[in-house]
Length: 370
Image (cartoon, rainbow, N blue to C red; front, side, top):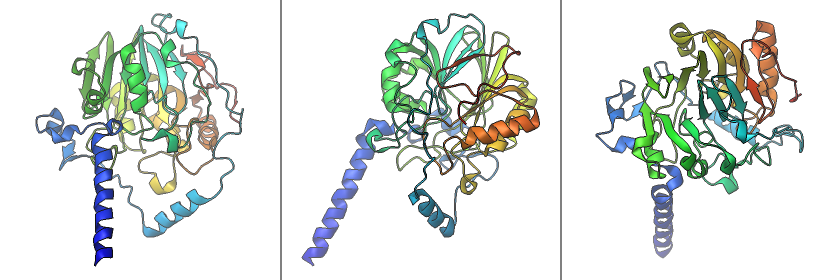
């Protein structure tokens, strides 16, 4: 009996410790859905405490699939990360950011993080600039590159940060703390603002939007559009914040940013409503047939670009972290092959390399990743 009592006491202490970590560690953010007055409760996409994509988007796998995933992740994978020195990083001249007027320029930082210069504005897209996509970075899979192309402290004033959803490989607590003093506006899908408010960002600097909402901001036209994915930080609040893609227009240019998404009919609908796009940044990486509903295969990345009526395609969501079972450069190899087959202009800049999107001369970059 004494042994049973001790075991129960230990379990209770462990449960209390887990609860305390989740409740009081700020890295997990805050849950907007717990506020009955928050406008996410009025969203037609929010039902029974969760956001939903119109089509079934299940990540449920059979017992056999789960066992196979455990087996596959346990295997030694020699090409899961680039060899030391294999990943070229270009030093970014931060003094030139925003100095080219209305010229459309994009600088990719690995994974889904990018600097977009459009309509005379400077925007950071999903700026995950931390060392690992984990609530506890010391224990997460380390970033491939030893250093970023710049130091956050070197950045000039950034007009806005735009987030697609709240997963750790996109919304990074440490990055927000270091970046927020330089940012004028944070533009996010519904519910994500609660995380930012907990981390010290003032309400007046946060813009939360639902799918299909279009709005004007600082001379730009933006639209929050669907994506086929999911959301959540910690053990609670799964799908209680919205995930999205973004349409960004300004200075005569138009850009589509997919966020994370499985393939779905929303791409064609976005193309019909907003296309054509001068540039698309479309997810391409961290995929597997067992979770294809939430992460596209590279061939679907090219099809999504075609669906939205894009001109130049920049594949993202690869080149920084290993979150799936494929080789580190498999996404760009497969996307490049499919783009060549379909006659699509594909961009593959080195990390930190700025590309000018001018409708000409934006052909495929050197294949540094082979």
